[in-house]
Image (cartoon, rainbow, N blue to C red; front, top):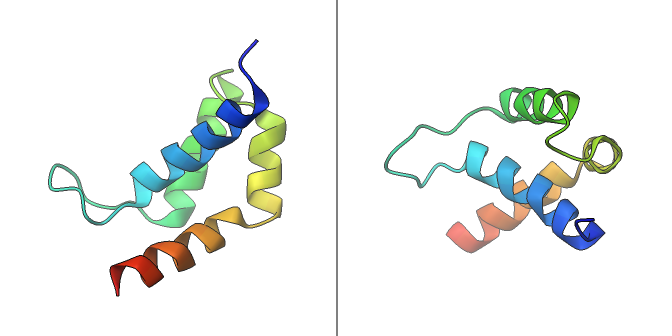
Length: 73
């Protein structure tokens, strides 16, 4: 019953948190490691697997990386 917009934001937010380099309490993970974690979460039923598939196939994570770089500069 969770709206699709919230499920979409959840995938992106978790990915961003995993790869973020500006968190003083943890080191940034590689994009591949972050994707592996997201896939594990989807396999456990914690994330929408179809939305994660789209996130990966459309390479949304590349867009996030470009956005982060442009705001950090």
